[in-house]
Each structure stands twice: as C-alpha cells, then as structure tokens.
Length: 416
Image 1 (spheres, rainbow, N blue to C red):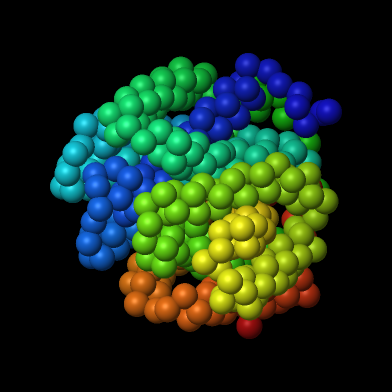
Image 2 (image 1 turned 90 degrees about the vertical axis):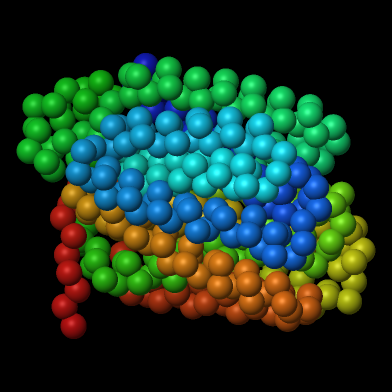
C-alpha cells in the first residue's frame, strides 16, 4: 500500500512519534495504578484522588507551554526539553517507594509527555501527505493506548513489586534511547518553516520526506467555531474515557486485582479500536465523527441500563470493552481534526489550548463523581457522551469536511 511508502526521514518521524506515544501511555497509567494500590500500597480516598488527578493537573501545563513554544522555535526543538523532563521523571518514579517521590516523578514525566502532544500532532500533520494524514495520526496516537495497556498488563500479571520496577525502568530507558536516536534525523515541519519565512529550508525538508500530496484547497475553517466544536468533543471524549477507564475501578470497585483487570480491559478495547479506526476515518471526517459519538452514546446507555448486573465481571467487562472501543473512535476524530482545523502559524498553540478544556474539567468531574453511587456515576457519563453527540451533529450539518484537505492556511475569524 502507498500509505506504507517509507524512506529514512519518514521512518524516523513515524517511529519516534510512535515510541513517544507508547511512553506517554506508560506514564499516564502510573497514576491510576498507584491509586489502585499497585505501586506503593493502598491509599486513602484523598490519596487515590491525588494520583488520579495529577496527570490532568500537570499535562495541561506541558500542552500549553510547549505548544506555544513549538510555534515560536519549531516543532523539533521542543522535543529536547520534553525528553529531558520525562527521562528524569521515569527514573524518579522507578526508584520511589512512598508518596512524595512518586508524585515528583509523575509531575516531571507528565509535563514532558504532555508537552510533546501539540508538537507531535502538528509535525506529523504538516509532514505527511494529505491522503495519508488521518491514517498516521490515528495509528500513532493509538500507541498511547498500547503503552497504557502494556503497563496495566504488567502490573496485573507481575505481582512482584521489585520486578515491576526493574521492567519499568529498563523498558522505559530503552524506549527513550530509541526516541533520541530517531529524533536526531527527523525533519522539521516544512509548513512551519515556510510560514516563518524560511522557504529554502522548508523546501529542503520537503524533499527529505518526499511529500507528494499537498491536498485539495477547501473553504478555510472558522477559528471560533472550530475551537468551540473541538473543545466540546474533547471534554466529552476525554472525560468519559478517563472516568470509565481510570476512575471507575478504584472508586467503585475497591479491589486491587479487579481494579487492574478493569483498567487493562478498558485500555485493550481502546488499543484494538485504533487499528480499525485508521482506515475508516480516512474516508471522511463528518460521517465518521457523528457515528463514533452515536455508537459511543449507545454503549454508555447500555452500561447504565445494566447497573444491577455490573458486579458480574462477565457482564461488565465486555460492555466496558465496547464503550472504550468507541471512545478510541471518538479520540481519533479529535486527533485528526485538531491539526486539520487550525492554521499553521498557531496550530500547536491552539491544539494545546483545545486540550485545556477537558484537562480543566477532569479534576472537577473526578472529585464530584467520586462521591456518587455507581448508577449516578454512569448517568454522568451518559450525559457527557450525549454532549459530544450533539456537537458532532452540529458539525455534520454546519462544519467543513477536511478529507484530503490542504491544511497550510491562515486562521479565519468567524463573523456573525
């Protein structure tokens, strides 16, 4: 398939981004696993909430600060900063046996991986052919789920705390080493270079990655409408994923082995879905986004209806798997539409700002839902899914189709 055509520079870009998202998945799962008692022993209710929330408090700082910086100094240079943060962070995490060092390590690591997200999405979108862009954005961001599933599986299968830490430290450092080696040769964004007045350098980078398809010219997306739409579906998808995959287990099923199994099944569903979503979203964004949120809402309603039977894992886990499967479909919509609906000059900044929406809402909803019974907890998730569905209906009728679009444009402010 043409989508798999590679050279050294394409390979380095896609492989390094893939490894980086796997690493983010590993880091992002440490907090919930700590909350479930799998890393430093059982925690009280407050301790659980702290570890469940630490990512949502630190990742936005990385998202926004590094997103802004990537629009100023370039996508590639930001990685030098982010890699330093998460390398130190993972070493501290692996050597931590009590709360404070583990929190410090998580803060450093979460800031680093969060800071890479806007730059990575922008760089891949800007240095990939238009017809291949949605496929690779979906596959690469799905590596986050695979990293999380690997981490949850490790702590579910291996019960020896020392062995867990050794595998985590050695595996993470090897992964970081691969990322560093690959990023030595990745090209800078040819669109960003062109936009910042470096046309000659842009052409050199363009030739390295052998771009063949710039895409078709479309009506330029309206900035405010795009920002609101993307913010709403981000809140819907991120909160429902986080609440169902990470918060539900330690709060509603306070059993360490059950917790790890629930987290693992949730992440497995998301991981599998990413590979199916990639070719589907390439066919068009509007239909795909609408159907993703429609079926996600349906699966959430099914879980809510089955509340009396959810203590039976044979009933609950398949339903959770299906819901997380659709959550990844919805996440693919976000991952593709965010870089496609924002202009080159402030793409990374706006992706970081968009991802602030759910990060601000997540701790509020985590605190609130942690006090609810299971039925009300699930009802909140139904409402959140329905909110995303309504936004996707709006975009289906009034939004812009970005299939095979040329995304090298300047933002247009809405006029009402």
